[in-house]
Image 1 (cartoon, rainbow, N blue to C red):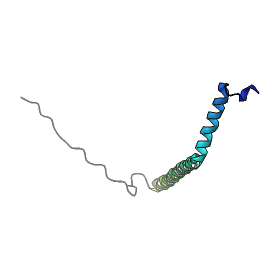
Image 2 (cartoon, one colour):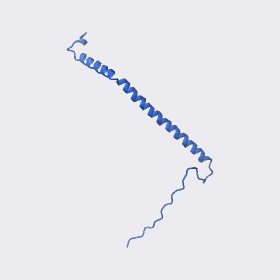
Image 3 (cartoon, helix red, strand yellow):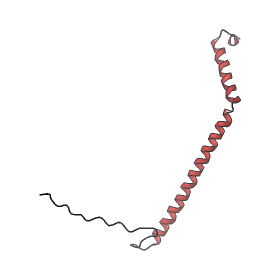
Image 4 (cartoon, one colour):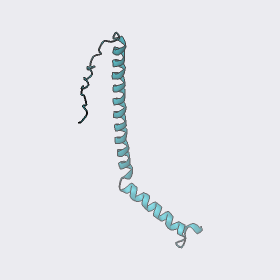
Length: 92
């Protein structure tokens, strides 16, 4: 068992690795990581719900648009703004 001698560098790497893992477990790193992942999952779920809502709203508006006769204004559609009519006169 050459691995567990104090003069073997791999032994000290193993000791350091075990100490780092023990420190992370003692300080509650898995709970913090789990909490961060839960928050991220909740944010993603909210974004997906918003996307579903927007998709349903767009589908409903499209259905209303298809039911309108051509040339008729849809609900919520505004008249286009008139373009300003300006003449540029040459400078003398």
